[in-house]
Length: 290
Image 1 (cartoon, rainbow, N blue to C red):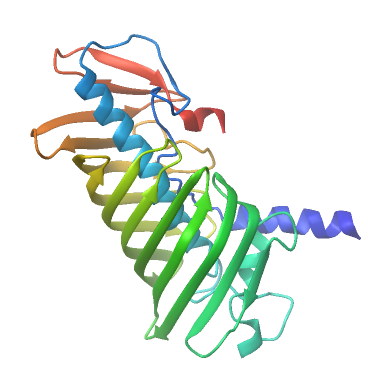
Image 2 (cartoon, rainbow, N blue to C red):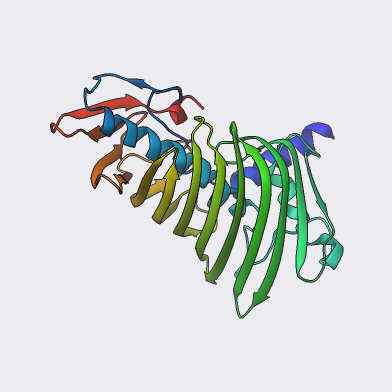
């Protein structure tokens, strides 16, 4: 029986893959204390720093977006919070379905459901798409109307993938048949998994098809990384089953004060940016080893 339950859990996690992305969007960072390696180092320290900043902050921000996705139902023609498929729909069942997507069994508890709010408590959970060591409380207020699910989310001191982040977000998800579109805005303060102190604002659009293993993201993030003002743009960003973005994904990272930009593109198990001299610098991002 225990085996059957575990297998069901694994299948449920795979069904949720269309958005459960950890979306650690870019759980990836070049070297500089974040675990990656560079095959052809650059003397352009500012370009390297921007590449590090962009990938590291995108990872922590992406984890929050990914977590938002795991709270949603992964089937049907309408949107709502995931409910336990083994139980009758009722107020007590609101949000319980999210427990299927996190291991070990019982690491997530769902409490205080009302007609417009629910609380999720994670205790060292592992979730879909690169979410590891997730610990903390997430409070959600929700409204469902006219095929749209609107969420207000708050979490303080949430620990995930070695980052510790306070964040608030608003997410609005609509359905068109099997297609889903989520408009997500969030504010972050805290420390990334690479040890960077951040204060960031995000605006992103996420699209996916129920039953598909991939999703696409575009949008921007801007704010401080340490003492620098850094803007990140997701140009072409696609995640499927791997921890890293798919080959061909691209982000641009700008030091707003200096007006300097690096363009990062992802390959298979590696990423590349172009420094000020025009040299292409290839590195193995952290996400490749997750």
